[in-house]
Image (cartoon, rainbow, N blue to C red; front, side):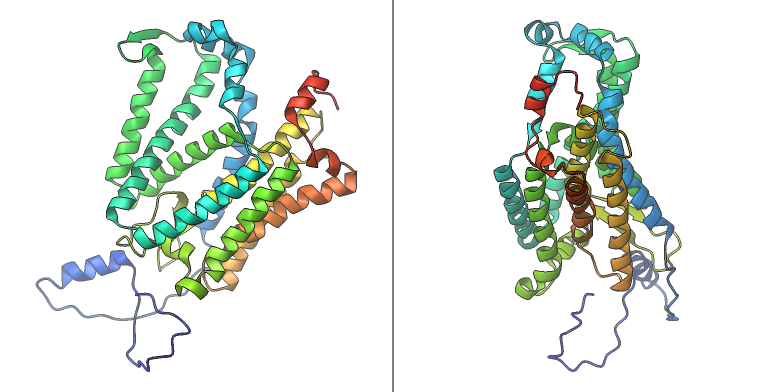
Length: 389
């Protein structure tokens, strides 16, 4: 039962107690054939729960892993084996060219359109969320998670293990190991979807979600700080509006309502990482949305590519400082959550200044902001093939 804090139109003096859904299910079963008595008490919550630390580590680890993925995911040895498995494609172009075609460079216009589209989709979720809509999101999440999980498993295998192929009627020449891994990933996703309401389902959801985000951060990239500024500033306004300002129009926070699944029978959307509160007697989950990882992650991945192509070390580069900034941004998010008594926080309110702000300030101090602002990977590789600054 959700009551508005500022609703004083009705003078109601009946006490209302909120209990977790799991406890409500137990009460309903107990009331079926016998008398039930209640003893109400209010246990104290710990200041910091272990789940917050674990969620913090997962978010930071996902961004670091996605940024460093190219280091152990692509090599000449891997490319040779891939070309052996795909002779038709390799005869037309090298694997590096294929990879370049698959990468999506985000433009400033595309960043604005993306945030507007995300806002429209969020409103549709708010008004039309139902059980069938949730199932549609679950299917889409599983498809993306299967592809991401397959990519994360096969990338190190292609680097280190020889492959045997098999001719299939519809798919042509396919790696036997890749087929086995694909079947495993599909089975994993189906089992999670069937048991998604179980207490342990958060493990499968987090694994699929992390694999999906790592893959997305490989396929999409920011070309320079200019586009990063447009994207993250739009996402900054988007997050604040739909968490803090949307109640002025919709009488409740649209972002929080959709995340909780208020209009879908209490089933939340799967596009987030969640960890159960271990030491909290009230139970529940700590959560972080994919956007709070993907948006800053695009900037961090750009910083890693920029440092690598310009031969920058850890101290005088940008990658490590942005990782530290992202970690502090998440810390400030949970601090705000604690100070506001658990009210949902727009994480990008803290993450954007701690990542984009750090990059801009470092660029100004080092006199490199103009280069970061107008940076182009293609022109850099053409004018300086060796990658030296």
